[in-house]
Structure formats: C-alpha cells, structure tokens
Length: 211
Image (cartoon, rainbow, N blue to C red; front, side, top):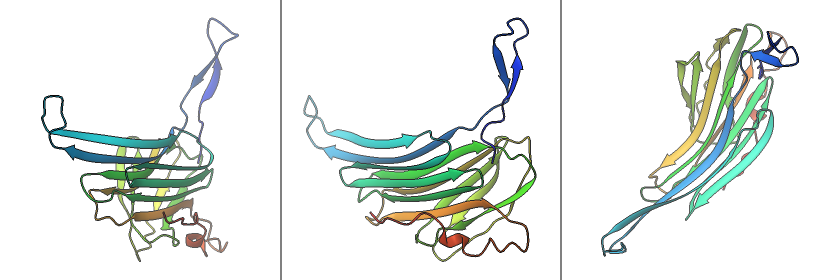
C-alpha cells in the first residue's frame, strides 16, 4: 500500500514555496458505545425524558498499532489494529447490552498501490464472529461482504495504480441480545506462487482479547 502519493513542485511565483499535487491516506480507527435511556416524568415540566449517553475513542494514526475502547453504562466496544505497507490486522468487539443501544469497532483507510497486485483477506481465526468489509475504488463500491463464524472467505481483489481505494472494516452490535459481537480479519497481498507464505496467515492476526 502507498500512503502518500503527493508530488512536490515549485511554486510558479514564489520558488521558496513547495506545492504538492496528489493525495495521501486518511485513516480513522474507532471504538464507540452509546446507551439510550428513558425516564418517565423527569423533564422540567414533568414530561417523559429520553436521553443518550455515548463514549468514543478514535485515532488517525496511519502506520503502526493502535488499541482503543469505549463504554457507556455497560455498553462496550474495543478495537485493536495494525497497519503496515503490506498488511492490515484488525480485531474488534461490540456489546450493546439490552435495549436501544449501539456499539461498534471500525477501521477506515484510503490508500493506493504502486503496482498491479492481487489482495485478499482471511478471517482472524482467534475470533469467532462476523466482520463487515467494504471496498471502494474511486468512490465506487466494488465489494460488500465480510466473514462469519466458520466461513473463511478469501475474495480476490486486483488493485491497480492511480486509483484511490477505501477499505472499511467493522464489527457492530445494535439493540443486541446481550452477547458480545467479535471478529477480525487479516488483509494482505497474495504472494507469488511457491513462496509458501499463504500457510498460516489466518493464525497471524491480532490475538483476541475477549471483553
């Protein structure tokens, strides 16, 4: 993956100023939790009152590892991810408890590639649950799917230069049953045949830390 494809050039009038053409990655890693409540007769005039209390942790770190968590009155989400030039590891949990609450763990990254490459993802075998995955190319959705328990999907994505890709990965729970939703994926380029590097990729994901 290429995280910065800006090209420097000299300002046409002020040579001491450098201008940049092109773009660079944007990354948003987050864990969020939101609790909704109802209090009859609690309003200023004795009316019923609905309220929402939320918590959020997020990071725009492009390369490297980040861990975050959010909680609100028992609603909880956790996030662990590592981004490098040839790999993304993501693991998340979400538990919205009972009621009209929500919890989510997600990663969104824009990037480019510098040569034509085939990429795929595998389910993080240390985690049992579902992960939602979406991939856009120049703002057009080219994939929507994910992984589920016992289903190690390996879709093939052929990525090409000069295209802005956006990858979105998430684990969420909305108005849930009280059970924790969890899941993770490993996103990586497919190595050349004969390297043997495919073996065990699913086991190299971030370790699950059940919360």
